[in-house]
Length: 416
Image (cartoon, rainbow, N blue to C red; front, side, top):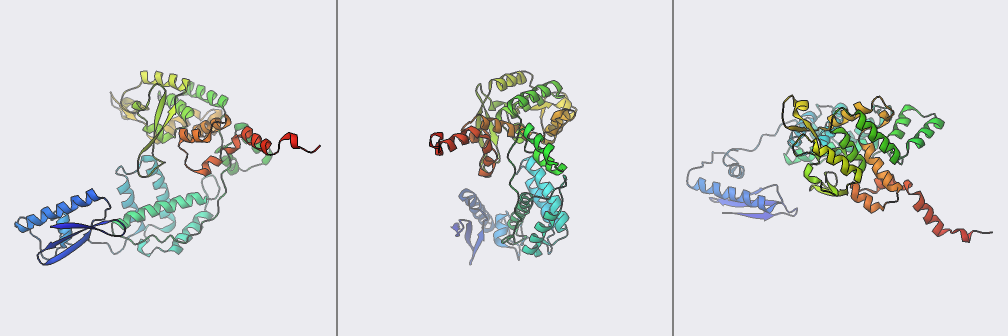
């Protein structure tokens, strides 16, 4: 019979005796139910061996043979060289099978492109050192982005985080050892400027003689006030070329939902008073949700949209006739489709400056802040979890800050 043991890291090992020999093998899991299933598999295959139904060939790795139901005869053949190109390609292929959402996979592929370009696809990752990674940081920092600015330290960290994820996967496959990233030094990055109104940005551009890159950074910080948001919604309603775009833009503007959250939304998430937002960013271990009340305007728009909805489970979709050349049914909207439709509608208007769907989220949060909504309530609406992001909105509480200073230095205490 077989039995289980735990090591110091809470990982399970299976132990068993066959003939006069004792065997022990790591199951590479901390899950007790999984470990029990593997133990039962070994016990069942041991019974088949005793009955002569399953024959262990000479030289076979017995634990692997029993765990694989007799399919693995010897140890896996590990390649002599593991190139960066092969490692990353295998990793991307593994996570593409539903492990991550499409927007995350898109970002991973961008990071992979830069990793291969700087480090080289033919690099043997077993020879990768901390110095190689430090050189990567230095080289990337010296390069220019599409707007002519330097690559930010945040971007470089994210690229190496993608490499670290691929490395962790490769460790599980027995291809590499620990990732050599201890002691890396990243350049200091500039804090992102606070969100600003259209008028504030235009004034800075007029008096500052800013470069195109500096102007682009400012426009990324744009938020629309309530009147501008209403004007934008009227424009999209009039000019939208696909039925789903207008209600999707309204929901983004009135809930602060991310584009990916809008695309994941399902019709069952709505009731008469609120909508459930399906999150992915808050936790890596489980799917989480948050609930946002429906404004009267959003409620009206969504009722009209659901009456004309082409069918299917998703809140925003399009008929298969338009999406796939087939009649009947509906197809979900992909991220690049949503981006392209919005960009096309705004392209020949003053709204062409908008940097995509995220400006609607910034605008929702900023307008809540301007109305002095409690930060905890704003967090519950939009799912903020970092103090860094909260700080970008704190300047929008002028009345609260003024009241705080007046409480410390009241006018009555001023010297005469």
